[in-house]
Length: 338
Image (cartoon, rainbow, N blue to C red; front, side, top):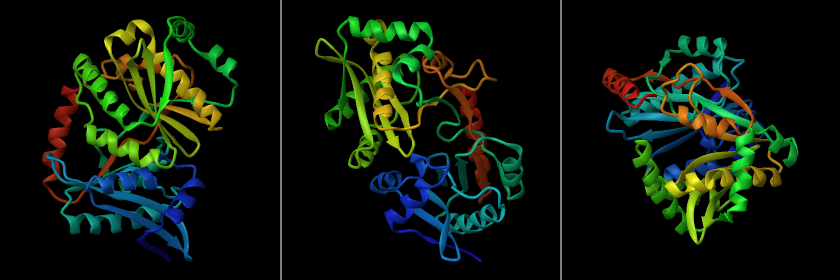
């Protein structure tokens, strides 16, 4: 018999996650602490069989203007070969959602998209979400080759840009200083104005950085030219991968190749930590040439690697008002070219 209960021990949670191929930072204890410190209600569920932890699901209550919901980013982390786990997750999470007044539950498991899982989700009452949740179409680089091989695998212009930055005297510095989060935020605002997107708040960036930094799992890489930070990127090192989570640059960096320099240094740091892959995070789907991320594809894909398509976000409807959210998000997806 499968028993579900709250997991309140970090070691228990992280030990299970570290041994699971679905391990990802969005279901980590660091992410839990970040969300909790931000004032959100979190529900770390554990699925036990014969008193052995067999699955986990970090649920987060999101008080969005478009409607309150429970989010399970990067999860649930279950044995998808046994549909009974999803059935139990659905039942328990529904009760949690009803108790906290959530209109729906949104999940995005860290598993590659396939028809078996999609059918299992449909049978348990989930429908395809109108919006993505976190990165679903990602670009990932195998870090097993040595640095020279990685350079040779890159697009020719990427090697040129990396060497150009060095020739121009760009210095890449690894930072764990909180003041650099503020500078990253300012660069992000400039990038957002240039590319017309809504940036994450300074509080969000700060909370994430603090949560992972205290366990040596976050670094800000900054490209410095004549004393000025022209490009910065926040990289998370968790489990077997490094995640290039946030990055921003000013207009000068575009001429000075700062973004290429910091990304290459983040890759080198991931190799020094003996990680197995570098996750460039989101790119545009191959089927949507008008997607707003299309411009990022050249930059990220030029470093070498492969496209990894994860299961699209799915929703479980709890309250009929969900369909107001569905309509709003469907329109927003079209407006934002997502």
